Length: 287
Image (cartoon, helix red, strand yellow):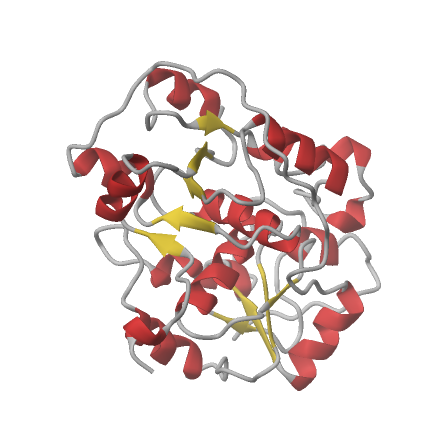
């Protein structure tokens, strides 16, 4: 399979997006700039954003507040259908209109919005490759103008992408391919800067998500990505799942695997933070 044979790429480049924004029906733009531990992304948005973009907060719009969820759901629990649909409609998302999400640069935060929209039934959404950094590096315009609230018609219907619960993730690690996309030292249990317990789900394999990006911050070519994941057994037709610390970075892995020709990767959304909430679950360390 060549790059041109991969249908409906989940990513879009800056030149293509710029042309789309000048078309008769431009896509809805979602600004998902976010950094774990802060500062809040709204500050970056106010300093400048793509023209027409609506800011969408990771913690309050793309997640359920942790205080409202059981620990087993992890640090970034998935939002409910009604709350998510309301947030998307307020940003102008409609069933018949394309959506493009972008973040600071690497696409990881934007991929959370991509995954949620896809999971809840919107199939016309992409992520800007290289994000805001690539856009500004190309000399394309930014603004501080905040668009008027829009009124989309998006209705959330869950289930369009596969999810795993803890038992299914454990079984997939034994019988298929479960990819842990955290840094290698976290996977091995040598350090854990965020969660209270270090290690990984027994049987999982490690493919740090940052290694899917080139030095320019753009995704590696699809052929390189295919070779990377094929070495782990993640090939078309295989049973493949992904997890990270809280389910955000793993959504990017689902996008990247689709970009490389492996669609239908299942997400273990609670990820490591949800796995360790049950002290009876086994933990592995090392390679």
